[in-house]
Length: 291
Image 1: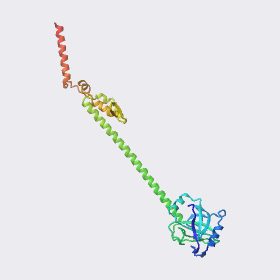
Image 2 (image 1 turned 90 degrees about the vertical axis):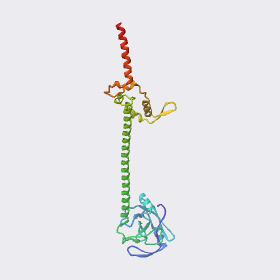
Image 3 (image 1 turned 90 degrees about the horizontal axis):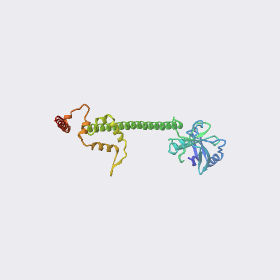
Image 4 (image 1 turned 135 degrees about the vertical axis):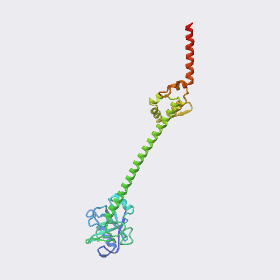
């Protein structure tokens, strides 16, 4: 947008208000030479509004190259410049005062140029005191079209942002639900391990009451491995399970591990044998006292 752009050319042209005249190279040279930004700085506008506001930039210089009048823009509004760069406003036209001096440069959207042969340039107007060249039959002004395009892009951006926020919220909820499900599954696995250990006589019921399950869950949170035995690395949780599982089924330990309220010692053959030996020893000692 900082390069020179064609805005007019020589030839016989008819303005929007029906005035036809011949434009020569001398007319273009006069227009370029008479352009004084200090006294009247021609704005860059959308379409041809009756007032020259808002301005999306300004014309810095004019020059003639062959049969064409060229303008050099400055102080372009960045968003407008981007829309021109992407082809939203490919056509350009001018408005001139009766004395032939430049009034403004109007950018057009999809309207076809009235003057053929320019590089994406055309002309237009509806002001009786100026001469503007255009080929337009549209009730919507170019400024309204620009605003509509900006509003549409804003709405699309806000919709995309809302969709992304909704997706992130759903993903957050899904992650939380998955984590809770994993936590419940680990708790179930630990509870089953403890109940099985109590049944097999390897875990005391009192250990369960003292918080063995919470202890094992805390061990499972530690994912780092350690070399508890030479050549074998394990996590603390895995090592503890193996440690409990390797307990021998000792009769005394099994007696201690009986569930609460279970006094059926007679079912333990080893205990019954120990009790018989004790009775025999007591009988021998009593007979000795009677002699």
